[in-house]
Length: 86
Image 1 (cartoon, helix red, strand yellow):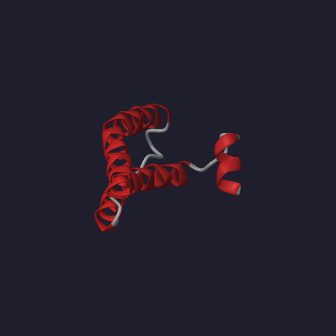
Image 2: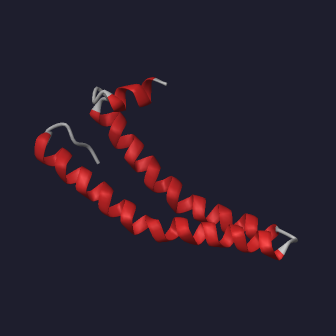
């Protein structure tokens, strides 16, 4: 995949990276909810609890991800102030 290769080689365009960061944040936010929904539909309580716990773990990591995103955004603004778009 060209995205991963460009990311590894630090040749990914800034606007593509920004889009990736935005999508990553949205994905985490909704993935935890989807897991909780799936857990609510399980007939087996043990399996339901597995989905709930995994969803909770995802939700607990959102603040950590947010700090990482903020750190990266700050670095981008510092090094590329004219290229950054919200």
